[in-house]
Structures are given as structure tokens and as C-alpha cells.
Length: 210
Image (cartoon, rainbow, N blue to C red):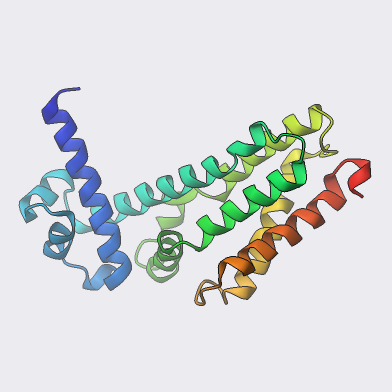
């Protein structure tokens, strides 16, 4: 890759990150392209060179952020590839890492933007769907299926098991954070994680976990 190509990719990334920050802070209608250029550290014409208009920029910023959030959550699943002797502790760690991702400012801002701009951009959900919960659950189901084959779980329906694991995290989190409007501390996140894992293992763990 040439230096010119690398520089163009870096500028595009800076524009998308700057755009998301401005849209999250001001909303689509109030956000100005100059504000976005300032946040990205580029000239206003550079924004238009990369994105034809503000609507295109909004869509691309949403999609790029959703992709980054998904990659972070997929990384949280990595300990399940080699969980060691203490599967419960590994699941606790994975659950906690997912909860941290669910509650970080970027994830919360993404949800707020989806909720508030859905009437202006009815295709917004489709834009982020490819990088949304379904992709995470598919990856989690794959990990659970492998653990089942190894005799570490009884997840005979790994897709369902993955869906339930995610729900055990998301449900209490929505209640405790009042749908993302209230910050909860690290201790609460760990409590939710441990409770979710205990319930999950009662349903899908090996016999001794019951």
C-alpha cells in the first residue's frame, strides 16, 4: 500500500470517527459539516471528497461504528476458544467484558442515534444489522458448540444457548441502566455477569454444574 493510499484511508477513518462524535453530540439535523471537519482535523472540502453529502456521511459513520463495536465484542469471546480448567470463571470474564462493551459511551451513543434518527433514516437498522447482535450470537453459538463437543457444556442447541446467554446479560442491564440513561458501576456489571453465568450453567452446563 502506497503512502498516498494509507493517508487517504487514515483521513477517511478520522472523518468517520469525527462525524460519529458530532452526530452523537448534536444529532443529525444540528450537526454541521464544518463541525465534523473540525472534529476530524481536516478541511471541509476533504470531507466532501470522501463523502458526497451529510446523509451519506451519517450512514457511513453509523455503519463504521457498528462494525467497530462488533469487533470489540467478538474479541471479548476469544477466551472461550481456550477456557482452561475453570469454565465458569472464563464465562464470568466473557460476560463482564461484553457488559463493559454494552455500556461504553460509543455503544450507548450508537443506540441513541438509532432511536432518535430512525424516522429520518428508516434504513438505519439495516445499515447496522450486518454488524449487530445476530452476528455476535452466531459467533457465540460457534464457541458454545465447540465447548459442547469437548464435553464442557450440554448446549445441544447452541443457537438457542447463545441467544439466552445474551438475553441474561441484556435484560438486567436494560433495567439497571434504565435503558442506557443511567451509569452503573463496575461492581454492578460483575454482579450481572456472575448471575447470568450461574443461570446459564444451570440450563446448559455439565451435570455437575446443576
